[in-house]
Amino acid sequence: MAREYISVTVEGHVARVTMNRPPVNAIHQQFADELFDAFAEVYVEHENVRAVILASALERAFSAGADVKAFPSLTPRGHHVRYVRLRALMDWLYEFPLPTVAAVDGFALGGGMVLAALCDVRVATERAVFGVPEIVVGSIGGLGHTARMLPQGYARWLGYTGRQVPAAELYRLGALQRLVRPEELLPAAREIANEIAQQSPLALRFAKSAFNLAEVLPATLSVANEFRYSAIMRGTADAAEAQRAFVEKRKPVYQGR
Image 1 (cartoon, one colour):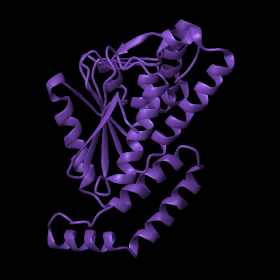
Image 2 (cartoon, one colour; image 1 turned 180 degrees about the vertical axis):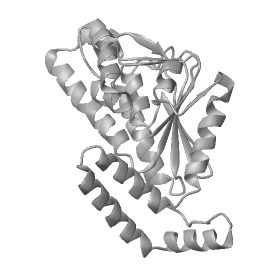
Image 3 (tube, helix red, strand yellow; image 1 turned 135 degrees about the vertical axis):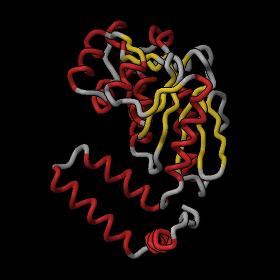
């Protein structure tokens, strides 16, 4: 599809999906559809990509969440359809087979915070602000994925009050893996993505699946699942190359994805 708000660039084994809908990357249906399509493009059309950065072209916002201005024109049935399509986007980003890195600057509110939470690793600037303020506009949303990102009590505090908190607080809680100056944001995100992309493409896909399943499986089943993936890996070319590179004290060279 032709995209107006979302772009894709690829450098080596890392893709960057960039959101650009001024002034705050408000999420309306076309924006959501384009984001879904951009990640589909990365996975289907760019075979060499092993990690993806999700970033914003705007200084003011990563994403301020839903386009509230569109709400008055929607009927209850229209809202229901909207939520079904948004859930499809969230499920796709959560289950995306490749590791993802969120590069957050400015506001990450509501759906914007969810987009960050859906990524595997998060880097933010010192001026970034997070929150799930849906309750302030008569709704709820983003709570499930926010609760994955933060301690339960803290996530509930944000969800019940709609308060917004600085990135430094989320970094303290471990929800952000790096806290940097604005000019360091993309280099830091790329550094992490490049480090990820050095690993076996097959092992990365297995690891992501194992992490996701570990959130819903009992510990014993989660470990059993990891052993199953590991057994499959042992007979692959990626595993053989990893072992040779370790013995030869060099970086492994993997073929494709």
